[in-house]
Image 1 (tube, helix red, strand yellow):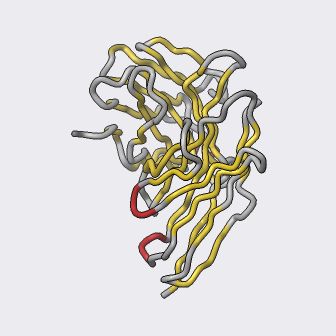
Image 2 (cartoon, chains in turn purple, orange):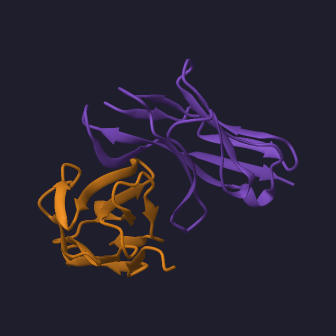
Image 3 (cartoon, one colour):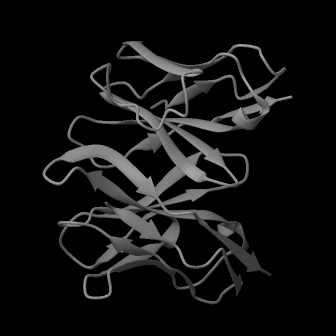
Length: 117
Length: 113
C-alpha cells in the first residue's frame, strides 16, 4: 500500500533562514508526490508536485521540493522563510491499486511550520 | 475561475439531527472527493466519484454516512443521525479528467453537540 510519512510534527525556523519540511514515501511503482499547505481555518492549497523529470520541483510562493529516489524522500524547501509561511504542510502520494491510478491522494499527518520574526 | 464551493462553511447541530453538506466542483472536473479532517486521524478520504459514479466508499465510517452526486456540478454528504464524534472539518475536492492534482474547497466545519 502507498504511504507517506512526515516525521516532524512541528518545525521552527527564524525568518530569513532556510526551511526544510521532511517527507518520506513508500510506493509500488513510480511515485507521484505532492505538497499542500493549509492556513488556519482554510482549505488545502496545492503547492507543487513531482510526476517525472527534474528531481528539483519548483512551486508556489517560492517553495521547492527535491525528489530523492534512493532515500525515498520528497522534502519541501525554501531558501528564506517568511512569517507568513507559518501554516500546516501536507505531503501526499497518489494511490494506485497496483496497475492503475485510482485518483486518490494519501496524505501524511502534516507538519506545522512556525516562522518566528 | 471559481474554485470548489462548499456549503455551509460552519454548522453547529444537536446530536441526532440530520446534517447535509454540499459541494460544487470546479467546472470541467469529473472526479470529486470527500475528505474528513480531525486532530486525531488527520485527513481521511471518505468517498470519491468519477463521472458522478461512486468508485470507492471504503472510507465512509458507517451507515449513518451517505454521499450522492446527482450531476456533474453537485454533490452532497449526509450524516443521519449525527453524533458528537462526527465533529470535524469536511473537505470536498475535485480533479480534471486524467489529471493528477486535486483542488480543495474551503471546508465545512461541523460541530455536533
